[in-house]
Length: 479
Image 1 (cartoon, rainbow, N blue to C red):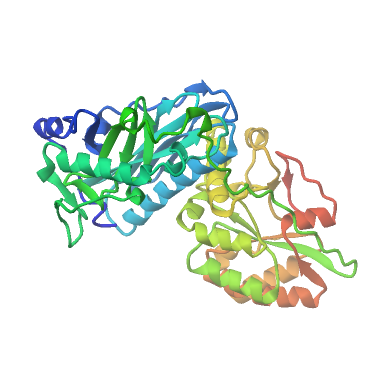
Image 2: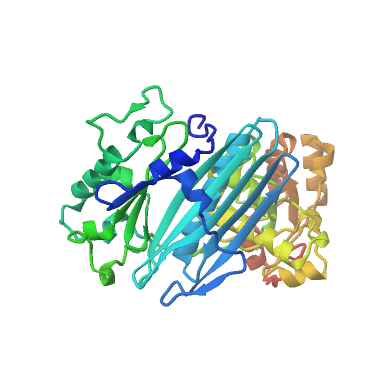
């Protein structure tokens, strides 16, 4: 990470001109990401563009996060196509995870911005170019990435989709891009294995492979390749982009109408686990707020697995962005992962747009981690005024038993309070971010089971007692 995030200084105009000079008969050009950033035409936040076919349209999604020591502003596109939207959400989540990992335990104000532009849109291919800028007190880092989609099918595209099968394009393309790097003006500024102990000038034996060309996009009459800055870069400056004119690749390119891509793995449709219903038992739901936490939530999942109990996790989207593997584990083990908004703001103090932003950002994080959009939301502090109720498009699940575990921080007392207060159909509130709460869970389960209680997720609880909660309405218990 350190070598990837070394400070990028601003190139002098002479160097920029030198690097942007065309080489190889003017059929390709080599650019630095730094130089491209200066001319990056970001799409505005309120811009909508109609597209024929399954994509339908392009509109901007804006995601923001602020604290005393960091600020994030991401803008990326959405469409009617869920494959497209899933790809964009995953990319945004990856950028945020890298940002949070880098700034962890560091002093000073850190910022991350991401914007996008439509590099290509014709009857065949949509290419989206995304530029991220991470900055901190003594440095900055630019990251350019791309995503490509078939306009005809809406499916994501890989490089192979642009070319004729068995055409031999792979060797020809790798040789062409390598040749342009070797022939460019200012080649002495290029280094291989940038930032590593083996960093060195490009030798005559340097060559790229097809794997080095996986990050590509179309732009007018060119196919463009963003090269990994750890593979080849301008020394002390950063990544490069090689643009190759399509005319030089004409014998290898597929017909535009044949660029379809391959259908991705279908997005799973949640299938509710059938609710058990033994009339001899009383059912309740254990719910946990504010996670996932890297230390305590895995411990809790181990306990629930040992006790054969399914619970409901009302997760903060900001924590899911940091620890998606824990949210995924919870979902994979049969627990219900729901939303507790993105950053635990008091929704009663927010505008409708701000409420939507909190909800949508949490949805994006949870869906990227688990593959499923959260079915329910728990508003922070249980607060939901008329604006909140009118804005949120799903039931608001509060609670009927609150041991105030966040206040007493004593495992034995938490168990005692829960057991004393619980009745059939109750929704029990606690927080998986506290070790004392986690340590109380096994005892709570054992004591309530001894009284004839069994544990289910909130959706199972609603099914058992035919609660049928409605969007925008608060629900406190099932019975």
